[in-house]
Every structure is written in C-alpha cells, then in structure tokens.
Image (cartoon, rainbow, N blue to C red):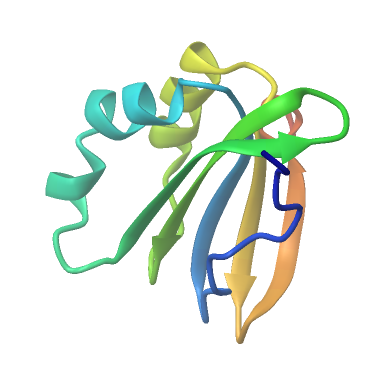
Length: 107
C-alpha cells in the first residue's frame, strides 16, 4: 500500500503546534498535561505516525487558541525531549524553535 505524503489537517488560526514529538508520545503528552481539561474550549488535534524525513515517523499536537505555558512546555520536554514548538497567529508562525532552547532562553 502506497503511503500518502500530504498532511490532511488544516492550519490553525492561532495557538500552539507541538511538532516532532516522538512517535507514540502525543497521547502521553495529551493525558499527562490534561490538555483536554486544561483547555476545554480549544480544539485539540492529535496526529500520529506522520511521515518525517529525519525521524521516519512523528506525532503532532495542535492546540487552537492557546499559547502553552512554560510549565506545560517543561512537562512536554520531559516526555519527548526534541519537540519543536510553533506559536501561531493569523495562520502564520510567529515563533518557532526547539522547546529545550526556548526554555533556556526564558520563555
């Protein structure tokens, strides 16, 4: 069976995208941080086993309308140390970086 190379999840207008999550760890992040409870009015998208050039496969979490906190980011890094965080506004990335580096810079 041929694997599709297109991503079938729409962009978000504003919020946070947690990218490059180790495959299978998105559910751990979702549950550990209680994102569905912490942000009950936000649409959460979890995409698992997305093709990745560098990792083979990865997971992605999108949280619409919310910029995650520093504390959330610290927990995310404990679960999947190499994640990238994208902060979105007006459908554009306004800040992007490795979560560990953002924490070191004092986000």
